[in-house]
Image (tube, rainbow, N blue to C red; front, side, top):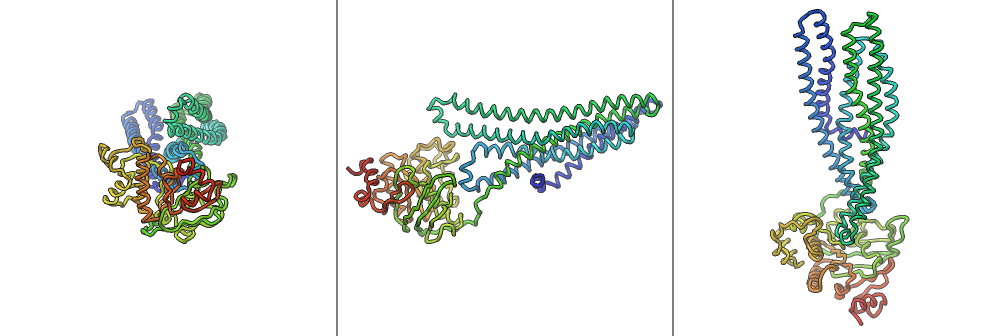
Length: 568
């Protein structure tokens, strides 16, 4: 883990070295001050001029302050660079994870790793490691100077520091464990709050504000408790450091006083030694703090690495798309979402020829949306064969496969941003002519004309300023702009009124004349004119045919049609 930690420093090592050198120079200037103070006391006792020693002391103070400030700025600047690199790397991995892995993670916890954990990483990599190196130099320098003053007093000081330092070393692993638990608690709190915010209107409509506030409050209390554990162990380490210096001061005062009384140590050396003793306080404190930060950083790094170590989808070169439609076949496909989960597909077989409109229908839980997840390779089937365009789906690179597909999800998500940005989200190189054509085909002209800034109008978080039907049409237009060889529509008309549904049926019919369209529909009126309808039930395919054929031949389809008043 230490090696992984240092890997974040490597790109910034030159600036860190420079900042470290400035810190060492500032430390050296600080180490000179007690010695110069000794010269001032000696000059005063011998009736000599104090101008020289006072001037040297003043210069040491000014040089130490300026150089230390420069080193501190470089450290902070480098810290921000480290955080930027860590966040970019973590976000890059998050957005390339497999869908199955993201499904079991919580958005709020992922955000906590990008924000809170990377900030802890900065503290340990700058203040923690680099400042600890400067403090170690200052500590060693102070010990050397104390050795020149009096070896006996040095041994007394080191004995006290080593004993209490051993106690602090025993505390450090406890701090790491407590910090890891604290970060996990913060992530859990973020996940709980994210849940409430994602369903904000439902919370309001259900009168569940107090209940959700209580749930988030419990998570926040748990995070507080974990934070208090970290604070407790850190405070104990800090108190031990303070005690070491205070006990060492009393021991030196007692032994040193006796040596001054016996004439084996002069007063100026005693004063200088005590000054150096107090000079031990900042470096020892920083070393302890650096140890605490190191434990915090290791806990944060563990959480970051949990994400970075997850397998990512392979990155391929951009694929050139063609307008030629592709067909799909499923042969005895078996799939489940996990080894401990029930089968979703149990021997699913059907064929979709290139071009035309094919519909998947059936009751909820039949496995229809999972078909789309397997075609997009959000998940990999356990057995059986899926072919796209006559090639096994696993032979396609993910980039090439998804470039050939247009996908409209059931929830039709719209992202924060302008209407134009949403429409061109999947086709950044689309021309203005292509954009306007897609707007016209999906009957979004009225919406564009009504919006105050037309296509440049922000649509709000998750498209909150659009109606459900408008969001669906935006999602369909976005997919059409991609010019797919296969268009996947999951409940594309579920939020449309009868007039707009009819218009969209016309659009789907137009698109089906140019490419392959595969649509999932609970509203059968959308697909009564489909070239073929695949009826799914309980993880299998029970019938394939046209609407009229299935009404006469399949009991389940006839029941579905009857409940929607399509047949008597």
